[in-house]
Length: 350
Ligand SMILES: [Fe+2]
Image 1: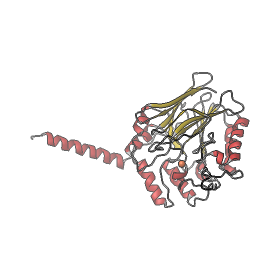
Image 2 (image 1 turned 135 degrees about the vertical axis):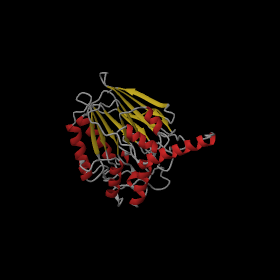
Image 3 (image 1 turned 45 degrees about the horizontal axis):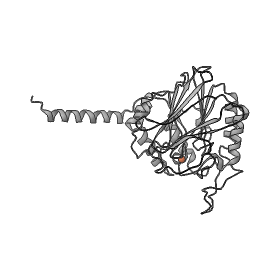
């Protein structure tokens, strides 16, 4: 048979289509969560519009991290239609590049407002329990998990052996959060502070207190979709509920968990913030990584007296490395761009 160049091209196209069809029909098996594994490198991110190109999973994979943490806005659902929300999760979960990550790297996560159901939404969002089911299905959380049974989406995971143990605490800042009032137009503010309302709700506060008190972990990653330390910008943040913010910081100061690190998203940019708190020699560090598929278009002058380095408005993801061989344990964080290039970095010990 005369197998000319046209035939070869046809064969190549057929092979490619069959491979993509196989991937679409048979999702790759997910990498299970291995709680015995010592976490040395963690990658994380947020603000992922499933309709935009999912083109950053390859650079994320290049980091060969031990864990991927979603910091919220996993999809832009923005709907009360649960079929539509489910289809948006399915679109992401079936994206071949995300399937590859899911097959190589364990994944955990929590929601923010857009995957919860609506922009800046709170406890009044009417489909919150249905939305939680879809989030937990997307994250492959087992039916037996205690987090499935209780209200809200907060979870905790412990990784690694004694002496190299990392506890990840995923806070739910949406399900129980009280409303905040919009500030008057022309006031220069977006929201009025709510000094009596709650972000976490009492059940989650009690759980957090117990989780931190009982923890024998050496490193504690506390994930909050909205920023904790920055107080000066006008957007969503813990400072909009000033007494809740004080309560969280004084809880950390009182219980003094070893090596606490805050991770947050939501802001469509990245920054590293710090604040001196009681009980630790070095300031508490918060890494904000928000912008997998989109970020703000201009770098506004935004005051954050606790900021270390610069804000990053290029699309990015976060990396945290834990050097267990150093005493005290040494941490390095990086904000990396789509070419896996380092856009911002900071190294510290507590
Ligand atoms: Fe958000």
